[in-house]
View (cartoon, one colour):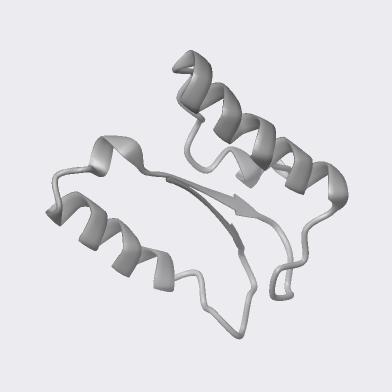
Length: 79
């Protein structure tokens, strides 16, 4: 599970990701969760390149076992 969240999202605050992380870890699947953040003040404000990057990241994880880096977007973009 790869989550991508805008840091300044007022509709779904970034803290909402804590609930997802808690639930996934409680289920025993914490090793299958990676959260990434995109610097933005809006809800679901992702560029086409960021969306494509997130999709390619999920495919690489599923098909090749390449685990994404958590919070990779803290440097500005989803890889």
